[in-house]
Image 1 (cartoon, rainbow, N blue to C red):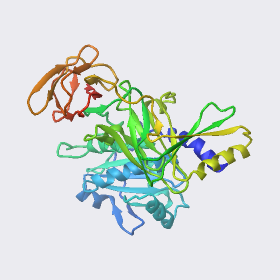
Image 2: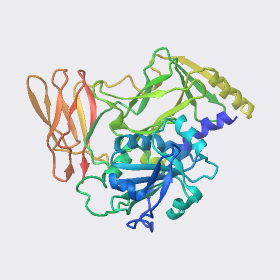
Image 3: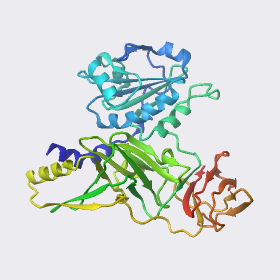
Image 4: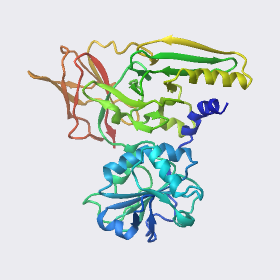
Length: 427
């Protein structure tokens, strides 16, 4: 029954994650006290020493029993690998039972490389004046607290944007940040008729568990490999800055981080354990953190051992559900898939802002080896190019005032017709 509860509650655990900067925190703008801590590898980090050769210090307070803490570690670790020369990181457990040996094992089991240790006697955590975890504190190059957040980061991209606010030659004096900076990047993502996930592995099998009296169905995908090749599909109506990919073993990933430009798809390789399962889904994070329903969210569970499904069925029956049935289906392209793909007869680009509103009067060039053709978005924000199928280089050449656009933005189409969402940021 424990396994069934884990399956049924896994979604609730990650939906409980919410992040908010504390705009009334007494720490913000003030010096963080000098400290020295030792990580599980025996390395020491002293705040003043770290700031001699780093532009900032990030302190993350966590505990081994904290689900949201576990969920954000993959994102933090990814950013650590990219920023460790500029930012000093330390993750400190505030749980007295989290010994150095336990933390070291946790670090190894989860493939983490960022420095981790214990907050001895909760000295630093007490200074944070909160009872929650996870908590992230960023100290700038001048030794002052410039960001304080209770709750986890949803993606690595969120944390990167936050750190970037305090790095570089333009940062010349302490400037407090009260919330995660908005994603102002220009991005183009392929879209499909509906939000969906599918698996590209060969020889996969789909199983649906139906429980009498329970409206929702548990969907399992059985794969023969240690890695599931997952393709994510979003619709033109999805807010590309809000919809994210969730992997119960690896946390959250922003859609733009999944883009495979050569194939024109959103792809992720998901490790599948020999025993147990991994849950994946696409979810509109902006809705769930507000407690709203996301009707397009569709989770499913990937397993390697079909016996896991039998265990779930037996546990459900043992818990009092007499009518539990399993429906198996062999599908070489298994997963949640609403349609067989785009049936476009042109190259279509939907130009939207971060709120999903159309942006007219955006000019782009469709270029191949022989010519460039300018096209303009109409009142619905739609650009339609009916040239012969080819791989086109697309660049923005003009856009209305009041919007931000990355000057270096470019994209390449697939050789077949398709649709994309191009997001500009409305200032």
